[in-house]
Amino acid sequence: MARYLPVLAAFNALVAITFGTFAAHGIKDPQARDWIMTGVLFQLPHVAAVFALLGWRDTPMVRGGAWLIAVGSLIFAGVLDALALGAPRGVAALAPIGGTAMMAGWAWLVIAGIASPAMDKMLGSKRDA
Image 1 (cartoon, rainbow, N blue to C red):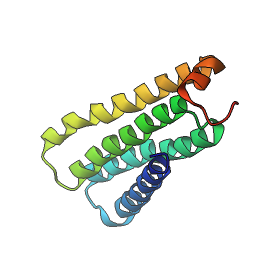
Image 2 (cartoon, one colour):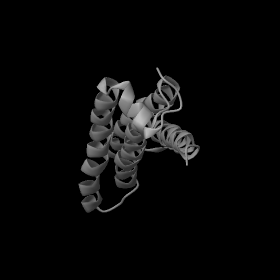
Image 3 (cartoon, rainbow, N blue to C red):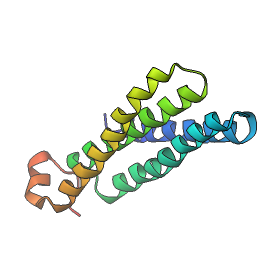
Image 4 (cartoon, rainbow, N blue to C red):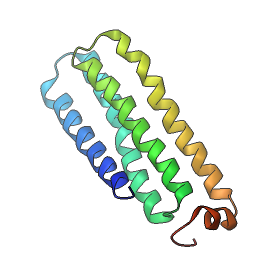
């Protein structure tokens, strides 16, 4: 299961780069371009954050927050990409799910950062740091 998080993050980066390039060179509609670029703006930094988090502390607590961030950014950007490609406007109602997941992931990481080392040991951390 641990290998899927970096794979998801890499896929997230691939989607962001692909849609960002498409927006820059293939989208004429300014609203569609803005939607895609907003998605990319949220997606790429969160990809980098997931990889940085795994390098910082590979513990169950940190992985939990990183999963929320990775899935949330993919949902949020995916909704904006879908809108840019002509999906019904009702799809926009799903964007807050992605945004909320990203916020929950960061809140989770605040807790992980201040949690005692005993909590990591209890949950089965791979290393102390």
